[in-house]
Image (spheres, rainbow, N blue to C red):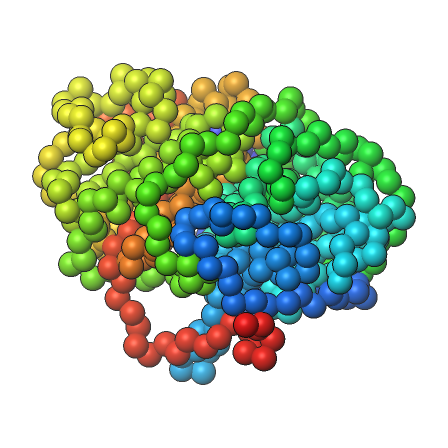
Length: 534
């Protein structure tokens, strides 16, 4: 590699271009996996008080929710929320290896995302306002900081914050890991939104806070928050509304500056590390400043008509599958509801996203009842779709598809299994599902309008859409999986986008279909049965 190619990128566009996969060149990653330095997926704060949370069997509300009545905020409901959002869903065991899977998915099951809560005093949890770190294996809250006041937040809700430990992903994926951490944060936002819906609550990310404010709120700027090369970077601040009402004004600076005492020291995740300077560079390039709040507007209209299995059953059964059977057929109505769940503002997941929509879905349809195989486009935003249409191949049909009013267009008829498989780094799972998705971001215009930070929020939106597809696939008896390995520019060429132009960029792939289960793998309960209340 020459010196110019080896230099760190000067902007986030340069990072994105450098970390593209292509058939002849994959983004730079580790030469081999050093299993002795594999980072622990469980961060703990030694010396912090641990509040063990209840485990309950619920909720009974049918998917996708919301529950007809809001649950009161108490230790049991808080425990259920955290379990469904970020807790373990099962233990897996095969040939002497055992590992856990969680309700919020992650690239490579590496889990860079950490979750925190800020609560007013709550019976059975804390007698004063406090900042907590969620420990998923223990299903408990570690009291990271205790305030002097009993209440600091507006009544009717609490705050959830997300941060990312980039090392967990770069250990395996190298330079492209920054992308995957942002996708994981979007999935985690969706997991929190679905968990809130199960209790009749509502999640809404806050668009205004800066990274520095979130870091100060969580104590991530403190030396006891993480070891060198295991630093945690702030991502999202989410208001969980437990009683119906207008989203409250929050004086974040006052909360940050309120008197409090910290406790605990972050555990070390790895004994050794390989540095990836480009990841640190990318994080600095798109660090978020404080911005103007975005008006959330009224709650979105009711979602699809499906009332499926209980939300808890859907969330706990969701898995990232490794193989598809190439035979399952997705029902037309399920396909319609699945796509509807990805539209801007669609409850409960997309309603948690405050930024304007910037992702268009390209669909490789293989086996959907009543929908002919072919290449399709879901126009999640009409104006954006018109701009994208002007850049795509003039040979596309743009035939409107009758799918109960959804803005779905057929670009090209005919089998697209080969194209889907090739685009996904030759992974058969993309061609053997019922359909696959490429998520095309309004890349250059959004970065110009919102600054380099927007690179992250584009991936958050893509991850959030992926989480909606995960859950809906599970609810209708199928399965899905996110695909982070794809040939970026080959997808652009398939669509007719100009070579080298960055106006639109592919940021994520997904596939839904009939799973092929590995009979060798034993599945065990996530937590001891004696802990779970009936």
